[in-house]
Length: 87
Image 1 (cartoon, rainbow, N blue to C red):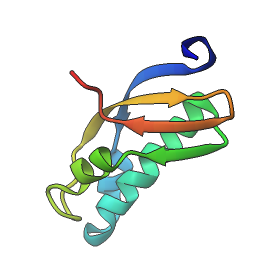
Image 2: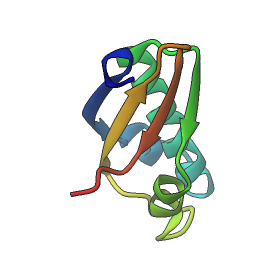
Image 3: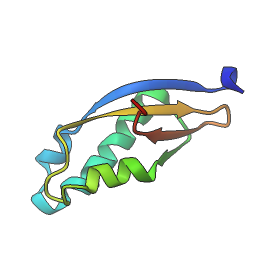
Image 4: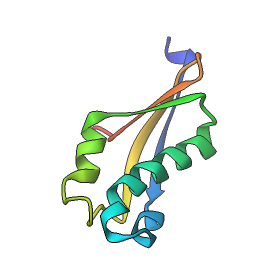
């Protein structure tokens, strides 16, 4: 099944989240990750891993990270899973 999936390491800039209002930054960061993965992998559906979601929200809704390094895997059915890399 390894030949049927595409795996990439992406560095997602989250400057769009910091342009949003203070209380909307973490939700906007999640949307920015979805948009970035959609632009680069063109999946039908995108699933955000719980560990990545907790990392974005770890400093609260007003102070998400400026950028995040993620691992995106696109499967043959068109869905994609986005998570933090293991290293």
